[in-house]
Image (cartoon, rainbow, N blue to C red; front, side, top):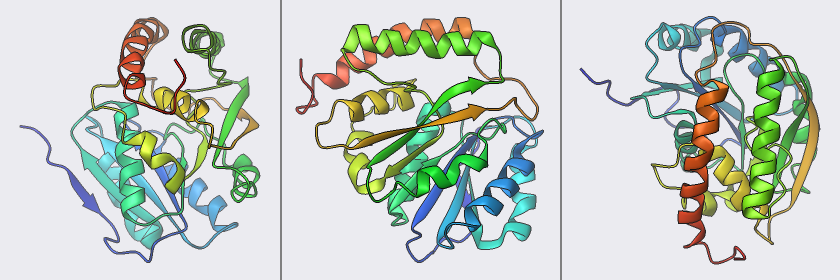
Length: 255
């Protein structure tokens, strides 16, 4: 039996200034702490926000934990559940939901605890001057192999697409909704590394202002990564194929 998509939480909000998009897959060990620490931190900087947690067909108790948090978090938390489609596509769905809610800004984080809220204010204070603000993981506590994956992807993008993205797959990013949705909607549902593809598309846009903030990536609060380094390497080949496909119908990108 397949899971039907559903959304729980405030169906109508008064166009929040910010929607935090947080995809989640089998993160029952970490999800409660992540949600509460992020709501606490962001409340210090804006009262107009919603944390949109999207359960991507988890097989553990992730969705149940999220639903249990709704009374405590109140209108700050919206929970959407869907069939499993992968991290990148879950992010894109979250971006589209944020745009539909009327959010001026979209902020994306992961649900495993590696995204440290202490850096949020550095992104938020740049929101008026930049269209996209990315974290750059200059310090990582999740192992040398994951660091190597990010370095290889950065080199791959530079060589294959002549585009420099310091950390194109980073989950820690603030985006001006109006500026990025055109590029979001050009990424097909078959694109696996969708977040990396979006970063490359935006980096090649001449009308998009970028900034980068050094961040530390913490150890996971619990659970295991859903993708290992070898799988990521194979997906890089798919990334090349998929990006060439969308480049052909993206007029602002140079050949």
